[in-house]
Image (cartoon, rainbow, N blue to C red; front, side, top):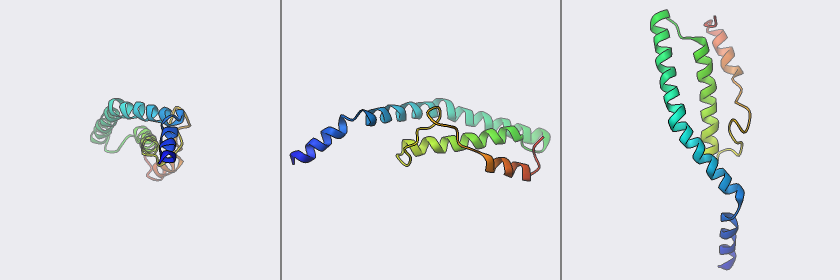
Length: 109
């Protein structure tokens, strides 16, 4: 019994666990107050471009694709699916596949 208790105490006193919890909290708050409103603004802007020009804006689509990959990176870190710390602690995810898809759709300016 004391071995398990010692193991629990060791786990609780690890600084890396507390740093991760702090980062997860910061990322969760940032997601709520920054990313969600940004998604709303991007959606409205893209809808307006589609209504006015008849097609979506390629720059907004590319930024939205980058944002989607970043949010995925955030959630993987916050749910312990990945040990990679999200941006700004690591690079932004690559969106080359999305760029190729946009070029194939012939919507780049």
